[in-house]
Image (cartoon, rainbow, N blue to C red):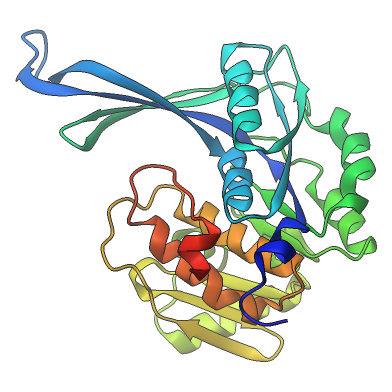
Length: 311
């Protein structure tokens, strides 16, 4: 398997994305004055936009790369859920949506003025029960049809059953990728690849003072959790991959950083697509790094096409 799978190979590959889906709303407007009521800018909204967010954006990234994507998640019975389903259909992402009447579909509203984000308003709630339990049967039913499983954990409570789901996927011989959250990574034991950023990894292993200390702590965590590889995304420092052979680092590829929103989604989507095609994590690293470098040059939660990546 080379570093460049054919378009046909990508199209014949399927990735199952499981996690916390969100709807990203953008209100764009002109800022001409300060409010007389408080020292804040007044935004006269002239355009609205809605995009897939969270795990839904990860699934979109997988699909945009040319790989088939299925999203398994739980949403509310509300207008944002209907909009999410509509956007998923429009982009060709297969949706397995569970509906929970006690759940608010997560919405992140960003108000943009003068090409800058002025404020973000989040709409969500914490249900008093495990929302994904009703979807475990669906997960087991579709698992065998997919070539890799990607868990997109945003810490919203949708992945309480992740240890069981990882074990099922590994028993089925599927590569498992996890975009982690929180300080307890034991939940991700046995994953093929986890992809924390610097702040997320430091939350688990503590701040490191040198590359040697980072290597020692990352490898200890990887071995304790029986992970195939740990991919650390490091913004302007590029990425470091830690595996059983040792570690390898690749430099950042971004020519101009416009917006880092969703860059981690693009990186793990590219890793998942490559592993689904049969690549090793080391082979997939360069492709994922290139994808991340492209997407930070775009505004908002964005994605990368096969042509951009391999053209």
